[in-house]
Length: 277
Image (cartoon, rainbow, N blue to C red; front, top):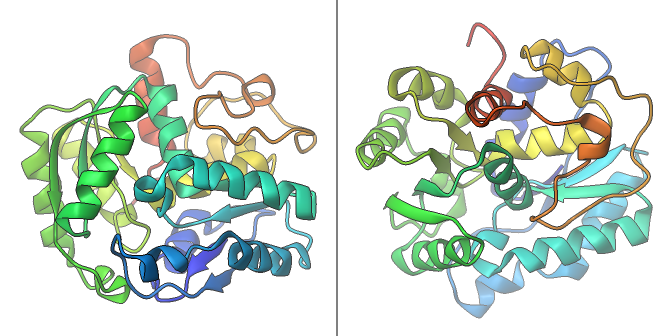
């Protein structure tokens, strides 16, 4: 996992989700990110060269997949993460993904076209995200944002505030709700909200972990733990699709489910914490 330097959520969220999962370990490196806005100083934090350097450090640990566990491509454009993942694959030979690519992929797998959006960002960043998702075919029915720019402060948002924002959005009856920021602790709120609202809640960090496990050829074990039926995987994929419109590794992992409603439930379960949460 490549993690923003001021992020205090990704590592404990990974620990929550992967706890007790035999044969799986998560490893981290950091990229200096302290603030989020649309100005040049913010965008420069996500320079592809710095990300490649971070990926090369992870490659020294001989990891099976690399994930940019940040959501910058949601406002900078998904093509940024597509290019990043392709460059990491070329540079290291290791399959790569990101939180943004994973979220879009799960939306597509679940058949989501109308969604609700929760972020900590400012109005202009939020508007850019909504526009980028619309260009990909996803209509934002309702959104809430907190107007924050300090990345460290995102993790200080309390559970009651976060859950209140999701509940407000649910009134618009979206097909799914995205908690879009890997420094909001949506992982621990998602299961409760899904049971209460009967709407899938896609937390960015959980989506990223799902995708990283998939590319590491470990999703069959992870899916079995969460009650997801998938075909066994014997080796890592030879190819690493990094475009949002493709079914990531569908030829290896198979469909999440057949019927539309079952696919939605499978995706909902897939990004949820372990049983008993």
